Image (cartoon, rainbow, N blue to C red; front, side, top):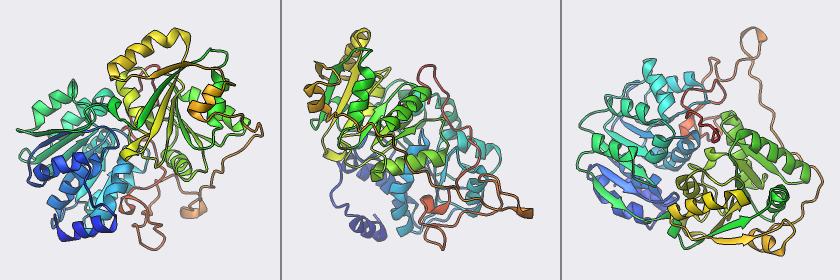
Length: 445
């Protein structure tokens, strides 16, 4: 790898590769197509990112013509990839920009016009920019599909296929995913040439530092048990099926004295970013989310994930659980199971290859407290601080619209830039783009 890249790895304290990195980097640095499978949290981002950066180093992109592309299924994962790669891109003087829905499309178009060697994008927003003439992909020599199985599951496959047909046909392709089946296999056959295959962490259910619990509850006691778990000493991530259920539980937790925040697809990108920041800092101790948080979110030292609503399939379960026990840490996944859900939940666990401890509990049981740290909440309502949004003044003294004004966001590290991620390229505010996945009944968000 280039010397500046090695030096930055040292500054970041990255001295020993994770298994997926050690397995794939020799092939990816040599320019081979790579098919990598590793569970979430296994280090896939640097596995493809270091090779992409090393092979792009020294090149300069023309306006609207990036040289490398990383496709991801969600805005949160795009931001995580951007945050992980930014210091290394800076060390190599490579320009990296993020292209996602929910942020100003105009600012993203300006960033591409100025030139960006590397683009991290969700398929829908990138498609929009290509159709507008703000981006061309015919110079892209390295393409990465990250979490390809989720892109397929969310209905992005036609968009991904159309985008892959526009990149250089002789370019390098890398596909990384936690599972490799179904539509992902079709992508591999269509777009990867004689790929080197590497699989580590054979099953997410076999992670020895992760404990799985099925807690059998009654419908009458389920909410009380959930509130007590949320009041534990320490952070907890809750998953529910719908946006409405997320908002309802969050309101109830705040009224009970628990510092809770909601995360789902109905929130604007600034709202989603803010609540994640508050959860990471500990200002919010209970994050209540739909499956939008099941991938692409890295929270250090999160030791408990609770499925208030059991997931619909085993992939969702594995990815929800992947928010804890990351990078060798320990954690627990707890699923609350009503009597009528037991049979379906047992089938789901069998398909996931997981043997979970099943326990009948009541909200006031010592066993619930032992497993989850549940305790009685204070009952004193709390509020989570929401910072005021600055109002930009446009021409004639009128407030400027969200992200649609003429000013550009400052670069990271520039005066007023505040060290914004993605080299200061991604603007804030603006209309929600079309890059969001289509909602599925009962699992929207």
